[in-house]
Image (tube, rainbow, N blue to C red):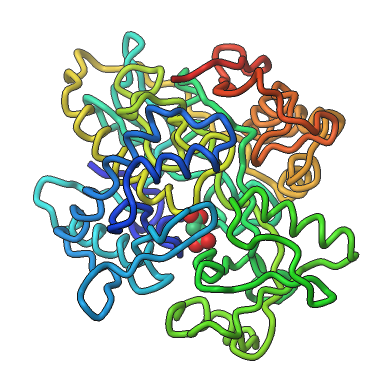
Length: 451
Ligand code: SIN
C-alpha cells in the first residue's frame, strides 16, 4: 500500500531538474564516481554507502529504462550524459533535458497506480507510526484509518522548505522525520543542508526557481555586478554557493548573473519556459540568481538497506540519512540514491515478519505547523553561515525539527561542507567520518563514527 499526502506525481522528485548520476560512460567507473562523491562530501561520506550507490547506480538506470523511462540519447542512440559540479566526467542521465524528475515520476506513478498488487491512497497523510513491542507495525492516517503492515518504508522527502528562501515545494518540511522521531527512530546530520547556488532571485513569479547546475555543465558562467567571473562554476556545490553569497555581500547586491546566452535553449526547455514566462530571455540577458536551500543531507539514520533504529521502520531518499552525502551531496547523486536504496529497502522490508497483534494507538497529536517566522529565523540563524548565538535562539522555536536542527548544528563545532560556523571557521580533522545523531535525548545530539 502506498500512502501519499499529495497526488502521486507531486513531490520534490517531480521537480528534479538534475538527473541520475551513474558511471555509464566509457571513460568512467564506479571507483571514479566514488572518488568524486568522497571529495564533495568533505570527509564525512560513509564510504560503504557511497560504494553501494556508485556500484549499483548504473543498474538502476537500466531498470528505469526497462520500466519505460526514456533517457536522453545522442544521434547514435547512446545515453547523452551531462556534467554537473564536482563530477570529473560526464555522468548524469537526463530525461527530457531538465524535466527528468517529471518524466520519471509520471511514468512510475502510472505504473504504481495500475499495478494489481499496489493499493494507492492519495490525499492521505500518515499522522503516526504505530509500534508494537518496540517494532513498527503500521501507520495511522489523518482520517483515522489504520494500516497494519510488516514494515513501513518512509519516502517522505526532505525539509529544505523550512528555510525562507528555497527551491523546494512548500510541503518539504520534514514531516516524515518528525513521525520517525516520535516513534523513537534516530535522526542524523540535521545541520547539513545544501544551498543551491543558482535559484532565481528578485523576479516575481519565479523567486527561488532552480536553474539547474547542468546549465553550468554546458558552459554557463557566473558573473558579478562588474561582469567578472569569481568562482569555478563546476566546483562542488558548497563552494560555489558560498562564493556567490560572499560576492553578493562584497558588492552589496542581492543576486549575481548567470550567463547562459551561449547555451542552446533546447537543452533546458522547462527552465527557458519559466524564465520567458516571467519576462527573462536567457539567450539575450543574464539571469539573476542567488543561493537557496535545496536539499537536506540529514534525515532518519539508516543502514545500507534503509533500516532505521526502530525495527521494521525503513526510510529512503531525502528523508533518510545513510551517510552517503556526508557534508555536501554530489549533484544528482540523490535521484540515483532513491532507486538504489529504495530497491534495497523494499527487498529488506519484504523479509520482516507480520505484526503479531494490534498496536496501541497513540493519542492523536499534530505538531505545530511551520510558520513564516520560523522560516525567516532559520534563514537568518542557520543559513549559509551560522554561529552559536543565532543557533541558540532557534532552540526555542515552536517547530520541533527546527529545535533538533539547531541542537545538531551547535554540537558540530567546526566548519565542514554545507555547515559553516562563523565561530568555528576551520574544519576539525578529528571529526572526519563523524555523524551527528539525535537519539533518546533530543537536546544532546552525539557525534558518532559510521563506516
Ligand atoms: C540541479 O539540477 O542543479 C539540481 C540537481 C541536484 O540537486 O542534484
